[in-house]
Amino acid sequence: MDDRPLAFPIRLVAAAYKEAGRNYLVNPHVNRSFQWYGVLHGRVDLVLGDATIRLRPEESVLIPPLASRSPRCGGRPPAYLWAVFDNVRLDLDDVAGRKLTTPEPLRPDLQALAAELRKPRGANTDDLTQALLVRLLVGLARHAREEARSAPAALSPVGALSRRETVLRAQAFMRRNLHREIGREEVAAAVHLSAPHLARVFRAATGQTLNRSLTEMRLTQAKERLVGSSLSITQIAREVGFSSLSHFSQLFQREVGNTPSDYRRRGGRAWGP
Image (tube, rainbow, N blue to C red; front, side, top):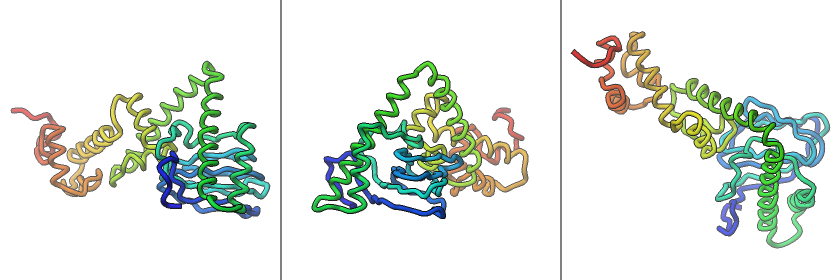
């Protein structure tokens, strides 16, 4: 399932239908591609990052790349299906990480996908699987947006609060991980969004890109350590996520106006006589 025709807006990596018992538990793991996970029967508690989503029959979740996930039986033994895919051009950013309810018109497609995964019936099974998955993804995303639009007055304050909380959680994740190299995709996975969607939300809320905010956090922490500790400049550079001392020094001088050693020598005061 590696090479998919470009006519499809996704590239299917793998898909399966499974039935499990009451001891069903999958250890936390990540995937570099999107994963759609849906329940047909029974219940599943899907631990997604630091949140738990209870999935009942005909409910599903679109898990963004690099998000930690761990499904387990939530009561009745489940029958479930999943698909891992690379998104080429579907508009899915705003529904990733949300519980999705299958509307009535899509239920036959859900059952058809499960049947094809359970027992392929002939040639072109990969194409049929992919076509059914695209139909479900597009339909689920549209249904979720229509539900949100049906009560805009009630949902807008919650949406605004969610955006603020998302930005705060992203900033907290970055602060906790300043000591190592992290990218936009990893920050996005920590807040259950795709990287492009988080980038848009973050910039709209703060006026900054994620990378710019991360750089400012690193420099702020470096300045505090230069003045308030006896650590060497090399140690400080490593503690704020720079593997190269020269890169750290060049960036520090460009952004702050002093070299790290001058900044320390002057006790954090601005450059001047």
